[in-house]
Image (tube, rainbow, N blue to C red; front, side, top):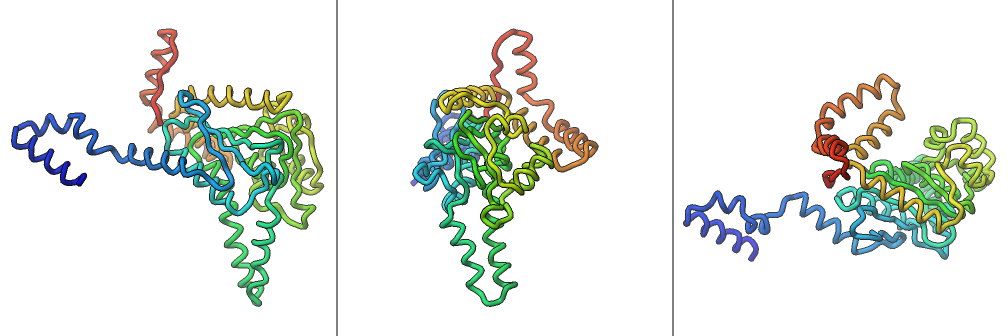
Amino acid sequence: MHHQIKAACWRMWAMTGKLQEFRNSPVKRKIEMTSTEKEVIAAEKELRRGFASLEVVQKDPSIPVYHIYLNRPAQRNALNLSFFSDLPRALSLLSVLPSARAVVLAARGPHFCSGIDLSALQSISSLSSLNPDPAASAVLLRRRIVPLQTAISAIERCRKPVVAAIQGACVGGGVDLAVACDVRFCSRDAFFAVKEVDLALTADLGSLQRLPRIVGYGNATDLALTGRRISAEEAKGMGLVSRVFDSPTALEEGVDLIARGLAEKSAVAVIGTKAVLLRSRDQTVEDGLDYVATWNSAMLMSRDLVEAVAAQMEKRKPNFSKM
């Protein structure tokens, strides 16, 4: 029916000699949405379906900030197998939405994350007994580990800045999540531990790779080998978090304000800054400078730059592009 209506409209306007008018008319606009608009509508619909282990909300429709809540408070937000498919799906959908200029990763209940769910760990490790050939078992096990790593890395792959708001326990896989975020804040009751060594495991979801770049090699080695628990203040001293708030309520309010500030900035600039920082992290300074020169040769002359200069000169708030 849709295609029949569309064909009829074309014939009608062509017969009256007004085809060019139709190309620019609201009627055609309504019939033929752009691919971007269709993608946005599909993403919004998919978000409304919900997630097994997460809650994704936009607290205020007028503020382009979304919150992803780990939503298994009765289990201290332990990461089950559903989480590892839910998180990348949620972040991928939010990357598409112009109404999501910044993302807050937080948790329901008193604790941020107590690590990977032991039932999920048992399910993964039991694969090693399915094949009598040790090499085949190892290949099968590796195939299960890599997607879990990819799910955590989805935080980095998300174009939008992701801010972690951490209260209570942030242990094991919780640390993996936190260090993949762009910025981290916590409440005074928060504590952190890289606990895998106490479970006879080598941490394999990103802490050993990302943590040394954030807190330094010596501090990362201390945390990873001892498995000791550190307080919010010690985490702040190491640079693991940027600020400690007095309470979970103050944390929520403070992080919401920070995320709102990020969302008010030029999306072109914020997305570019995140991309260049991540690319430069694993490169020499010279290679990083070369990359940002190439990036800005394509992105520097944006409408947002013109708007930012005009807004400063006119002493008003800029109106940046939606992305």
